[in-house]
Length: 255
Image 1 (tube, rainbow, N blue to C red):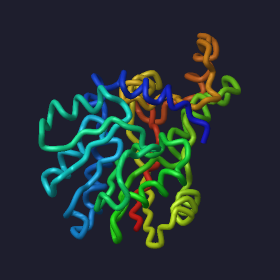
Image 2 (cartoon, rainbow, N blue to C red; image 1 turned 180 degrees about the vertical axis):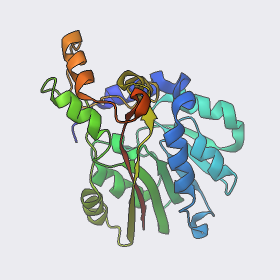
Image 3 (tube, helix red, strand yellow; image 1 turned 135 degrees about the horizontal axis):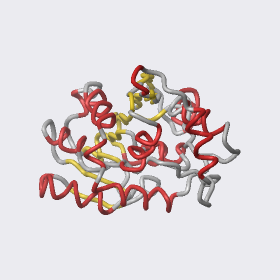
């Protein structure tokens, strides 16, 4: 997965002030992810990996302590701390370079964050390292059907990568197995929220920091002609001119 990590960090840092206003899908998925948590991993130290503005962190705190909230973007982490104060421990770090000792946490939870990692097999291996024996990794991530309508529309305008790529269930299972996980459960869910326009969709993606961070993206300004071609290709799918956008979410539990 060719991702620009510097761009990822910059995007989420910039989105910290707008994230909570538009992150309805992230909250919905986070709530459903919490419903999958087994009571056996609600004791001991828990890690919220890629905590963002602290939605999942707050929910975990209501069930267990201590909680470690980790995020690559310092402004996101600071916002979480402003909400939760001293209730959690806060670490600004990259999920691909976890600064924790071996067998130091009981459970690792991550809501729509691991898709921004370049080497998922290495990430899963490192999480396995810090998990205590019997500990579990529970996470949600975007699947390959995510934003397929936007991807197809851009493909009719130019040859650049405008939409991020995401791993499939089969790829995730392979990475987890290579990292040493034996009990793996996956469930894929498709969400199709509506938007007043394609531009409204693109603004939301920017406001949550989830716009294009592929290394093969067009680093120059997209011309008005190319943009209009894309907008024309993305046809309204609902009455009133509204458009739909697909978000495939894969829920995973592994130990």
